[in-house]
Figure (tube, rainbow, N blue to C red):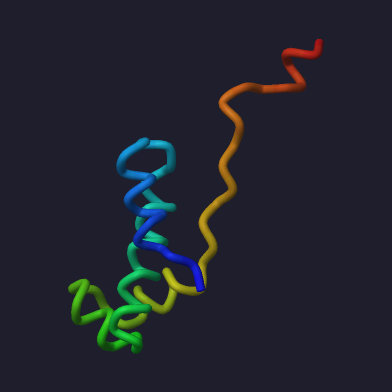
Length: 73
């Protein structure tokens, strides 16, 4: 099981991830705590379908800040 709370703290401390990834981990941490989609939705103040979509979706892979192909040319 992934420790989403530790990941959230690391992201906030280092500011090294996009907001979408932070939200993804936050919703997963809430889901682990409350155990149901309805309980998670109530706790976060979201609609149940929104929580379901966020749980299903994977965060986008991060792109390197450097364009390696461009540097090689």
